[in-house]
Image (cartoon, rainbow, N blue to C red; front, side, top):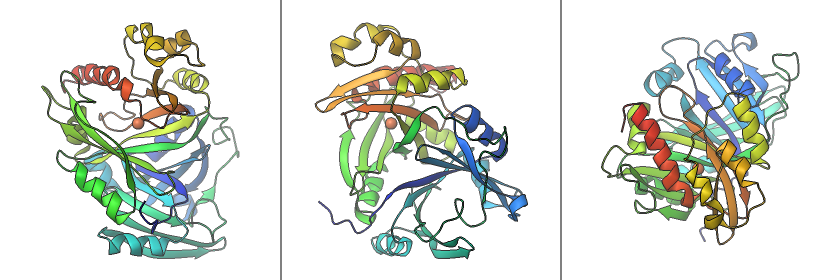
Length: 368
Ligand code: FE2
């Protein structure tokens, strides 16, 4: 057990750089059921960017766009399309997190910074992660304002910005990164040595290959188990790996998917589908052999089949999961919705059916 030199309270937020934050915010509100809780932009004195803080359960997304072509946010979206730029974790001490991680080899991105306004002191720092992604350390213990300095609260003010009842998304279960062929172990080492994470699981190409595309994956988690970061790299297959397709369209490594927990996946997915969110589908034959494979579960199989929800079981219990299609035109970032009943796994038993489904989509895009 490694010494926890970098204590983390939990995920703080995930910041996307996007081409049009106003429209993205509308999609996350009407599609995924998030509430717009804070805003920074021209109206709050921010001349460079516009940011929308979107919340549901414990999940906080920040959607940021640049107001001009030369801003780094514009360069990020020009290169990567809409994507995750910042993975922010709440820590008790942002300066210590920066010192401890950079001392162990992390590259600094933002030196420890304290910003003070009428709500208190907001402290943060950041280090570089895979690709152009950064990991931000946020200490909001001395701050009582909306999100962070420069933001104004936006909740329940009117119909358009009113609090959304949500679709039951509760927290971030894990966030997966895709890196280049041969780079997975380097990033596993990064999380182990510079951040004190340990390896929870690994999947090799025998676990997760289909006829054509393959990948390898290792799951890293922090000391208290609250943060889980699987890292994928492409593996050699007959045709193009789904990870390589991501890398080709994201123009480098980055976050592939964010898994959100729900306490009732049937209700959550029913609402998401009503809202127009598109999910991957597996053939109906998957459900004909489901109970044989996973045994007794609480949910009606016909309902799971109707919605396309997948099930897997291990020694500790079972889990239900489903994956959206990419949420932008480039085949890059997507979401997973997951409900856990004891299992701490990632749905290994679904990999084959799921990846065949992904390959059908890749083929439609001309990328297999
Ligand atoms: Fe996942």
